[in-house]
Length: 77
Image (cartoon, rainbow, N blue to C red):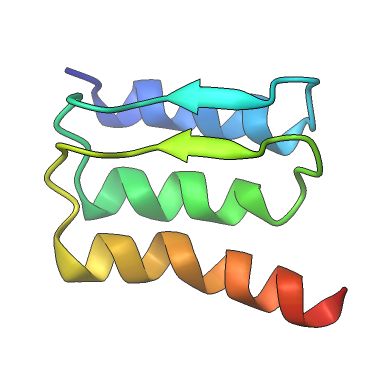
């Protein structure tokens, strides 16, 4: 289980555009607050190709938060 502070650290690593290509965050009880932190960092990352967020507590709003920056990023390319 990841806490909000853990999600903040993961978001910081994603934002740094590390060479990480796959990130498995499944079954970590991530909620919409965690999704908000992670989603903002996805805009800056060009290497991450797979983000597994299955079996979490995101809800519709958390999924929306994660998808929105990815859709905007793809529209700009």
